[in-house]
Image (cartoon, rainbow, N blue to C red; front, top):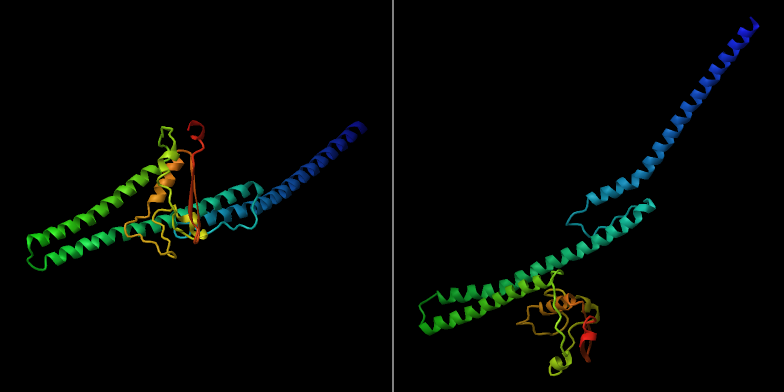
Length: 254
């Protein structure tokens, strides 16, 4: 009889102890789960802010930067590279907008001349020679428009980096020896990085650009880069301009 009583107490104590362990496990689980949720929320908050700032960026505010104060170190490189991409996109959009304005201006000028000359010619009866002079003048303006369109088309082709260039080695010194002559300063030092941009205007120098579309240097730069070369320009006031072309892949072949 005493054996059964002892066994009963043993079982009862074990059940009570098991319940205590179970209760402790449940409480520990709840505490750990709560702490995990708090930590997860704290960790995801900057990521949510990061995503929100990205969502608010559009073509009108590409100069905006991601300014999340705290972010997991794993995402720091993403934040840095994303801001770099934004800067490049902003610069590209600015160039496109400026280029569109420049093209509109370049097209508007000859078209306006055409319109005025035609309107003047139609105001009264004129001789055949007068009509001929008007048509010749109109043809000159049309040629300017065609030249602009051809240059823009050629420039667009040179900007495609997948064009295959077949090198044809030759002695460039013989080709350009008779072309070397002093150049006037083309830009201040602060403006030199931009002179390869399409239709870039240097406003602080008295340069005649009546027949200059502002596309030549862009074409030269693209053609040289297609051949894995580089072009640099140095310009000093009252000293002149130095243009350096480098074709590293062709040096050994010449």
